[in-house]
Length: 124
Ligand SMILES: [Zn+2]
Image: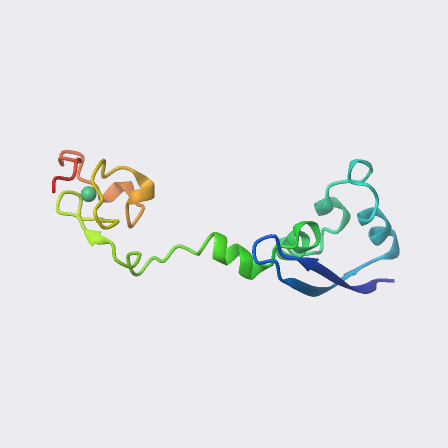
């Protein structure tokens, strides 16, 4: 016997409340509501929930919040405004100067594309 419940959480990111219907057995609900130090990991309590459902129950973050925080990497286009680099043929943020190997300042994020013999300091 499972028991659906409407769970309402406020997103720590947007401050907006959202409601999700989650289903668990009464025993699972009881354990979910037990004090955190007395219950098992949520993945063990409700293994059938998706990671999004568990995250929402635990923290209030929705899947849309996660996409906003960690956007899926765009494999087809460089981030807007980034400029193609003459030394490593990757893209860097506008006005970027520094080491082309710096992953956070490079698109695509694939080190293989850098010629090992290239001069990896941008010059502007
Ligand atoms: Zn470069």
